[in-house]
Image (cartoon, rainbow, N blue to C red):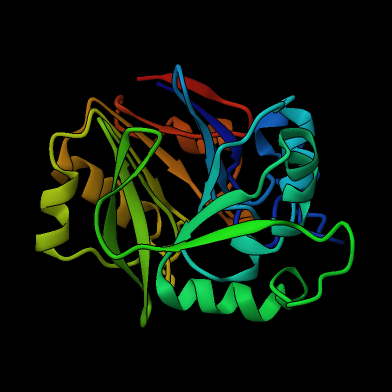
Length: 252
């Protein structure tokens, strides 16, 4: 399985509009972050987790020619706003795109993209097959396990796919849900910044959780400009933990 980080930034991305901090003006490509998303590729599957406002450019940048499904963690705009652009894959593949999400997220999509679900549709609207999920499901024989995590007071989904676990926008994971993560070889976890945050793990909390779960490799994502420069922060981390960056590809 190949995983490509399509974006590793928080809701504003990095650089932030009009900001002149050292991270936002950095010339290091690893300090340039689109909104968080990953692409999973196996021999028979290509799917993405989350489709935020940068989805179109992410697909172009990664030269994606096929998309089997979209899996959503939650309904915040930086994770769903790009769904309209599945239209390109509708046209090329001559079929609707399967979208998997919690029921409340499905309802939000029906509301925000109501034109895609109208009885009489305007020509060219995105064609989406919504699938409400509560437990394990499959995409072309690939088993995917939802992991319930808390984003402040909002319950959202992380996902485990084989030996790979992806969690973003969390600030609490129960012991019960940690059992679903254990023995993952690779864990991706959000770490917004160094200072404590009300709805996201900060750097210290994310590192502590990865040290508890003990994957072979840990990656941090959903990074804000307040985290600091990529090359400087990474020096502070345990050897098995890295800060993910846009277009990083890993094999599992």
